[in-house]
Length: 172
Image (cartoon, rainbow, N blue to C red):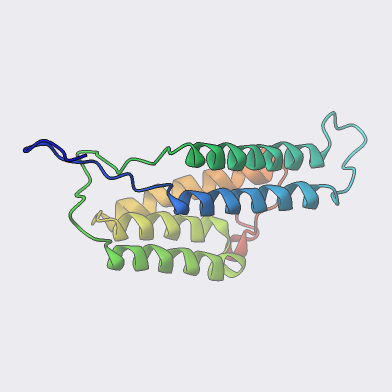
């Protein structure tokens, strides 16, 4: 059938294969989480919920989401492009910013055992904020220091989860 003049014909692009890939990754991670949770220890006798329960719930939810995504993709659902006013769809990826953030994350992983979370967390916040365009370095470091020390105490004292103090061992 020929479309009338002045009207656009719509071509069906078919299923979005990238969504199938994402569904497969979700399914693999979910299955791995469930299987890995089976090997967890019993925890403490006074715990109402055993540690493996969280892995079972999260892993099962990931597998369920993978199945739902695959079904939605097979039915022809496609993700829409970002239409936010702060996103310029005509510009490509800012590789410099992406590389800077990756560098900050790699430095965080490399330095956390040596410097400790309180110092590295402050550097992580300040580095990420600076890479993303904030030029108030001193303020970034101060905010990062407050957040990282507060989170260190929250995990170490509040939850009883030991986080490496690093060079501040004995000070915190």
